[in-house]
Image (tube, rainbow, N blue to C red; front, side, top):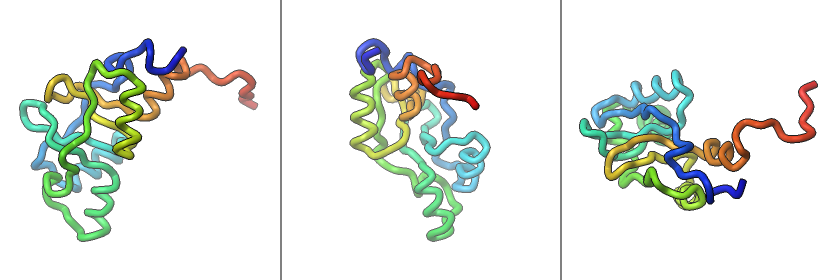
Length: 138
């Protein structure tokens, strides 16, 4: 498969979206990241529109830098970089490279509808989870 020409972002994004509200605490963000294995969480308003992003980097700095334990609205990245649900995979990869991030929120208008990671893109470009030819399990 020629990566980025057949599939659209909506075909490979992760759903449902696990997100934080602006009033969620740094401790709550850390707990959610650790429990779910996430490295990035979107911060959304009540109506689901994207306000910002919180990554392991921000919560790590908050925890080990200034000891911040207040709301994530004080540490989130703004303005957030997001990609459209109808986006082509090559364009999504370029946006992720440009923003130097591991994953991005996927939006439909201003509302967050999914998340996409480099792993999602690599899986799609590899045709799924097939083991490579010549890979031995012994």
